[in-house]
Picture (cartoon, helix red, strand yellow):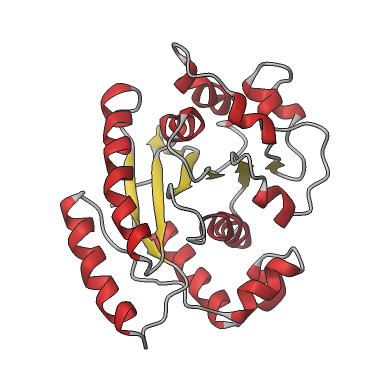
Length: 254
C-alpha cells in the first residue's frame, strides 16, 4: 500500500516511475496525465522524460536546449535542465554506459530537489537497460502500465525480476504501487478476463491492480494530436474521469 514518506511531520518528495518494457501500453500518456492531474490537486510535480524516443518531450511540445542526458553526464546541474517543471529527454540516452555506480546517478541528482517538489514522475524507456535501472534506483514506487495484449501481460513477470534485482542491489525500499490497465474495453472477452489474470499476477508479486482502469477513448488520441493533457483537452471525457480517479487512488491510498 502506498504510504507517503514523512520525516518529522513533513511529507517528503515521492519519485514514481511509470514502467513497462513493452511499448504501446500507455506509459507516456499515463506519466503525462498523472503529473497534470497531481498539479490540479495543488501538488508540485516535476515530470521527467527518461526515454530516448522523447515521446513525452514531443507531447509537451517542449523547447529546451538542455535535457536529462546533459544532467546525467555531468555537463549541467539539474536546475538548468528544468523548464516549466519538466526535463526533456534525449536520443543520446541510449549511449549511457553501464559502469560501476552508474545505476545511482539519477538518485543522487534528484535528492537535490527534495525541498522543491512533492512528486517526480518519470517516463521510462521500453527497455530494461541502465537508463531504466537508474529510474528504478531513484524511485520510491513504480506503476506498471499494461493493456489486454498478452505480450504486455507476460512482460510483467520479466519486469518484476528486474525490480527485485534493483531492490536487492541498489534500492531496498522500492515498491510496486500497482498495475494499471490502459486502453481498457470491458465489452471484449479479453477485457473481461484481463482483470482476473492481472489480479492473480499482482498477488504473486506483492502488489495490486488499481481499481481504476483507463478506458479506451478517442479523447486520449485527440489530446495527443493537439499535444495536450487530457484534463486541459477534455476533463469530463471518459479518459478524463478515469485519470482523475487514478489520481485520487494515488493520493488517498495511504
